[in-house]
Structure formats: structure tokens, C-alpha cells
Image (cartoon, rainbow, N blue to C red; front, top):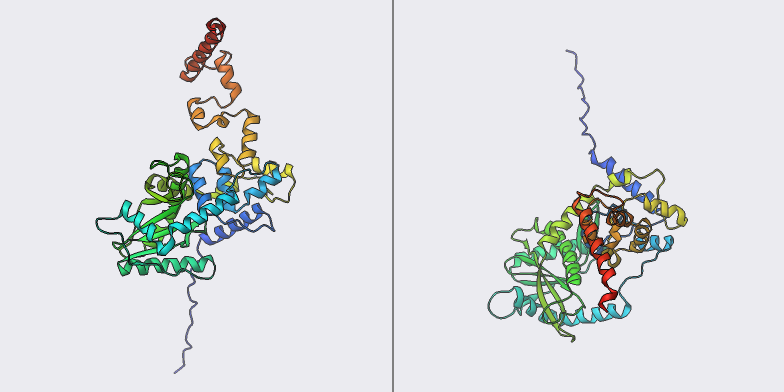
Length: 388
């Protein structure tokens, strides 16, 4: 009988993932925006917190997502950033943090037990795992393992400067909180140690808000690890430790970061779509600091910004954006609250014209309020000399 040769059917091949070519294209596009010889600047918690504070700024979202060095870009534009922590403040902050964490974190655990613990004595048997590893990726993996082990052990653990990973715009951002405490019940608490004073039990509201936004980033990163850890739960109340009054003694307060966490999460979701912002840019746009100031100015202005005076304390490009806002007469330069009150009047010129009765609909409540204010001002100025 004739022998039949076996028929070898071709093995079915699975189609490549649809997202992969898109991700590669996005990485290439972001590299072009940075410049061919410019290494990406990694995102940190401060940068992510600043993004959450101004979620409507497409300019910052794109530049941070692309890893552009905004300080170098601002210098090349002729508007260098004039803020930052002084060397003295940096050394003072490090000395205070070392004091808080001395003796295996005894004082830190006392403060945490006082604010977040239950009845009884502060914990004394606290594990302090070694988080040493090669590179940020290795440290992040070692931190995740230490968190799982500490949660499974069912005791107290203090992780000093753990490394957390959070995916931002398709690439990992490595974050380093001051400390994370694991409770016996599996709760993880973020600890932020700051050098600004806490006077009479309260600190500067703006600085506390910045610390809360920064801590919310750490909470989000911890939640990714907690999802894969049995019995783990990330607390939304963080422990803020500051110097008490005008001394170097530590004091602590609890800050609820649920609102900041929600805002930051929405902003990170928006950041994952930076390819939409990049796709709208003119061909050949780049933020390479080696380009001429004129080219860089054109590139920066091709991305919409949402300037506010608060940007001066958080963004390296704030002075450039403020100059442009003032030149254009934009009311944003006066603050978000003023901008919100003025409705459709977007320039200072339009506001003054409406107040003078030259422009605007009298039926518009904003225009009516401006004209009433202008009339009261004129009346006060006319009657001013008679009052002396």
C-alpha cells in the first residue's frame, strides 16, 4: 500500500499586540522632543505632585512625560528657574530626618503610635529590613519583597527610604518616600519628614498641601504592590513629621490624602495620553536645549499652558510662562480665583474695557459687577481729598 506522507500544517501564529507598535512610536516621538543626545529626566514624586496641582497644563504634562529637563530648557529660553532648596536647608533637613529615625526609628514609631496607633505602649520590637539592591529597579523589587514579608510576619516594620515604582506614560517612575511603616494588621502608612516648622500644632497650609500631594503619589505606588499582597491595605492617612515650634524636636500630625490621591490618579490617567498632545505638534518640534532661543520659544508656545502664580513654586518654566501671560495681558497672571470670577473675559484689556462701559453685555453679571466696582472706585477717588 502506498505510504502517505504526513502533512505538516503551519502552526497558527498569534498576531502581535496592537499596543506595541504604538508604544514604540510614542517612545521615538518623545525622544525626538527631548533631542537626540538628551537623556530622559526621570519623574519623581515632586514632579508628579506638581502635575496634580495643575492638571490642566498640557505643556507641563508633555514635557514631564517626555522627560525634558525643564531647568535646562528654561535657561536656554533666558528665563532660568530661581527656586530650589538651599544647601543649608538641605543639610538641616537631612539632620532632622536622621534625628527622627535614630535608634531604629524609636521616636518615629512613638509619634506614629501616638497619632495612629491603638491603646498600650509604643511598639519596641520593630523590624527594619535591609533594602539594599543594585539600581532603582533592583531596589524597587527588594522593597516590594520586604513589604510582602513584613505583612506576612504580622508585626511592626519600618522601611527606611524604600524605592517604589509607578508607571507613568508607559515607563516606570521610581519614587523614594522618607519611610513606610507596616502595622501588625497589614496596614501600610506613608511617613513624610519635612524641615518646615509646626507651630502650635499646625504648619504652613501651602507647604502641608504640597506634602500631601507628594504623599498621595507614594500611596498610589504602594497600592500597586498591595494589590498583589494578601492582607495588605494602604492607609490614606499619612504621618507628617516636622520640627516642633522653633526647636529641633519632632512633632507629628495626620494628613488625609484621599482627595489628593484622586486628583493625582486622574492626572496620571491623562498623562498616559500624552501621545495625543504630541501628535498635535508641528512636524520637527523639539525642546532640545541646544537649539536657538527662538526655535525653543516657538516649540514651547506650540503647547498650551495653564499658568497660575502657584506655578512659581513648582515649575522650572514658570517665569517664562508668567512673562508670556503678562505680555498677552492674560488674567491668569492674576490668579486662578480672579480668572474664575471673570468668566469669558480672558484679558486685562477686555476687563478694563468692560468696566469702562466700552465693551461687554450689560446683562452679563460679570460685566455689571465690574461697572459697579468702577463706579464705586470713581466715587471714592472723587470724594477722597475731602476726607482729609
